[in-house]
Image (cartoon, rainbow, N blue to C red; front, side, top):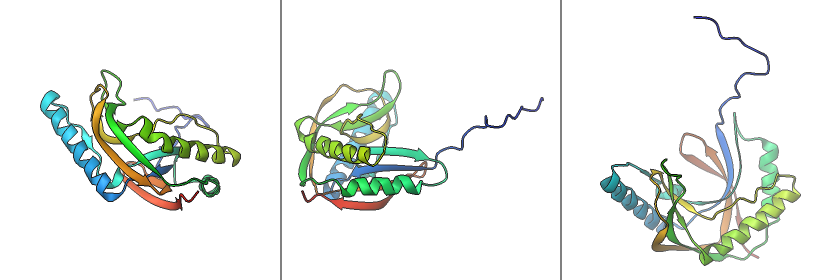
Length: 197
């Protein structure tokens, strides 16, 4: 078998190990209700189509406000510090969020996430995202306007038509900067900021 050629500068980059993102988490009771709904959704899907989706555990259910990147070998200190500076500058009053529909982020015919979404009840999340985005931009972090407020309920699910669901509603009083240990299903809170606008 011939040896593989090695060319300087063309080696594959190391795989990412650490993710950084801002998030909003539901209270424990709301998270438990959403987790129960996710398990039922997976059970119904398995019964109907034989597809075994993977429901998200209650303590991992969240809204990602802004993903800041995946990195290899740890989080860059300068990005973490810039994110913290931007978060401190956000001034906003607490608000209520409500998700009232289940939808799919899957693309036919592939499997993908099943998510909770909303219309009027997610405007506060949009406003918080926009305020955070503006603050990040001022701190030199590349803008990313793509934001669809949602809570991922399960992975590996077939495409489904958007349909009403029992509302999941909670008061958002803070947001957090999270360190995700990729592939290990572990999230570490780096900092939290109360909403006191």
